[in-house]
Image 1 (tube, rainbow, N blue to C red):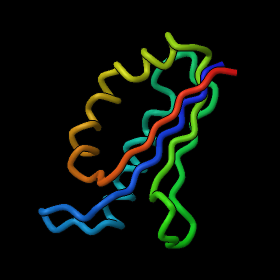
Image 2: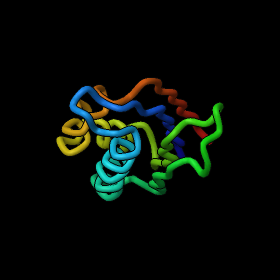
Image 3: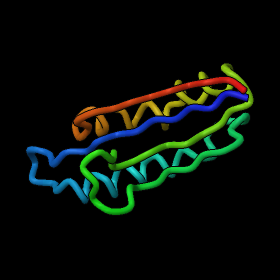
Length: 100
């Protein structure tokens, strides 16, 4: 099993979208990816509770049957389609993959 965890700090965008609106849109886009490919075991997208300075705004906590399933997810057209929006609104990103 391969665990894939990603955290994002989101910013407001030049088009006038608020940070909160961008968090909500990013969450909706990610939630839509939950069933994209076989091999997704867990796919949980959550926003931070509260406004702690050290907390990221959004997290994807996911598990895949293996590296091939993760690669299929990452290369799926629906997943790649959300990347331009994420590049626009993400201030910081952290990612960790590990096998158990």
